[in-house]
Amino acid sequence: GAVVSQHPSWVICKSGTSVKIECRSLDFQATTMFWYRQFPKQSLMLMATSNEGSKATYEQGVEKDKFLINHASLTLSTLTVTSAHPEDSSFYICSAPDRGGDTQYFGPGTRLTVL
Amino acid sequence: GQNIDQPTEMTATEGAIVQINCTYQTSGFNGLFWYQQHAGEAPTFLSYNVLDGLEEKGRFSSFLSRSKGYSYLLLKELQMKDSASYLCAVRNDYKLSFGAGTTVTVRA
Image (tube, rainbow over all chains, first blue to last red):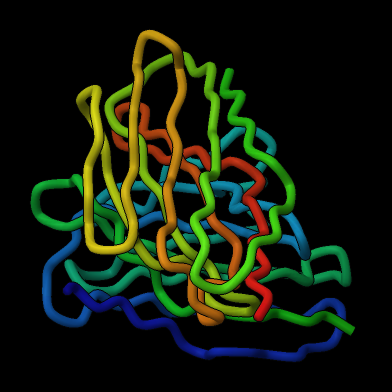
């Protein structure tokens, strides 16, 4: 099946710093990628839809200036958490749909801890 | 809005069968997915239903009734490695909305 990678797998940072997370589709092109956030014992919540060549679409309640998304190519989307605070500590997961759009393949996730 | 309900926890014995129900009320629908998620890992795709009926994939089967807003995931011949969280997700247009997940614990 299709493979999606994320980097880094985990990151610990100080409050006020920015963190960049990369999401790559390894063996297929993805004009659209999705970014989710998952808090402990909760389900995945869609944060935004990343669109290659255009602006990302953010879900209600998600601050676009805090969570910067750049879809630089057909295989790479990045999420930058700016001025991170402890409440941003979470598991961030990206996904990309296959060509038919019937299946979304998830990356392995990035565990962010903000001290 | 989206409302997707599934039980919080289920426990079953190795070798047994477990059925995880999911009910949904969503503003749109064009497919229902089941994912398995082990702790600290990303979800992995299990099944997809877009038409009513049963889809069988080895030990896992999934059923959908669109008129009732209802689906279930059936896990047969349970193995210890099946202990995980199972997520029901509804697709509306291109977006997935997830239920809170059902934690299944398989005991020897």
